[in-house]
Length: 320
Image 1 (tube, rainbow, N blue to C red):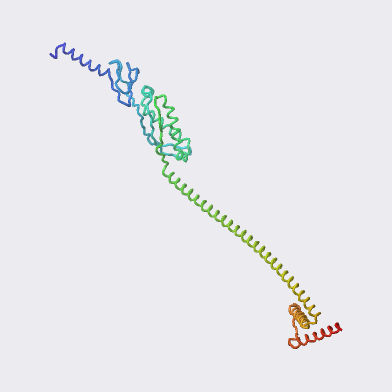
Image 2: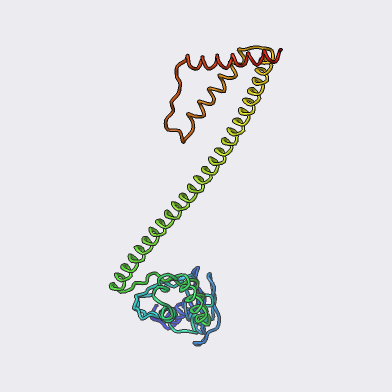
């Protein structure tokens, strides 16, 4: 009978045995650790797998997630060093290394990490100008990581990364920055254009300078070649005069011998040559304006004949 005292006792005893067994063994999933408390005081930690504790005396205190976790940092307004108001949000990666510390050193671990991160974001960005806040994202992340990780180390956690996701300046400031960047780009374009024109003028001047140098060298070489040509021409003219003088001396000598030999034709040739040379010099003279010449051939021939007769008489007298 179920309502007999003996049956009720065995029923209660069976229920107590089941509850005792249930409270003796605990199954810890992978990636977690359980803290065990004895009468409310921390006693030990169960690793993943099967753990055994003293029933009714020891209980599971906290179930700690030992895997790396992610916290989204909500957007907040931060005032930079140059009094610009920006909206900042981010993300925090952390991992529990010591389950008892994470369980008993801080109340509400996630809330504590989140608020500590937000506070340090305001501190770090408050010491930077707006331009530095926008351009030095890596330095901000490193500084935040160093500060937050050091502050949370007594809690038994390791902050692995802190990343600033977005920094949003006010809309009017964004427009002002866009105008400033446009002005800077136009300024750089003007500078590059002026530099290009300056370089072009320099190259053009250098080209003209080189051209003038080449022209001067060409003129110098032309003058040298002209001087050498004149020198060569003078040398050849002197040689021609020397040869002409030699020829004239030779001719005079031959005429003299012919005259000594009684050749009247030689006398005629000699006299006629000197006669024509004399007329040529008169014609080349710059002071001569008008000349009256005996152009009749008979006059010249007659003169030559008279000269010839005189030469004959002289020659006869010499022979006698």
